[in-house]
Length: 201
Figure (cartoon, rainbow, N blue to C red):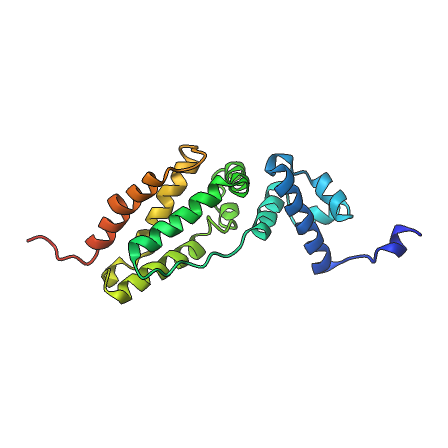
């Protein structure tokens, strides 16, 4: 029986899904360094032209496949701003320290300063990241823990940006918990409390 009769020809969304799943499996097994268009095409049972029609290069495909491997994160709601922020940082730290986080760091390194590509990564997408952190900060405002003036995207995301720098800029394999506590207690909470505080006369 020929391949054409044993496997229906996939098109459109079905073929794209098969390619993305194959690329995600390759990423999980070999990391970005081991991801090739040839291997993904073979694994998906298609040809490289089908890949290049959808993604211009392996970095674009790698980023799309990485998104398939990640899950949306629901922000914690402990009833305390400090605990919520620490929990979010600890989750991010565990993720970025994991094999999947290693893939993320490879992709960020390969993308360089290409903002358009970086914005497609869940952890780098400014709007979605800010929305999650604004949710946490908004709950604190509603509880009276912070002034409404604190509800600014740069204020809300400063803690996770500082943690990201530990990995991306300093190249640490994982951040010690005392670094997370320091980010929260020495930078994030003082900044939040300063917003909306009366100006000194």
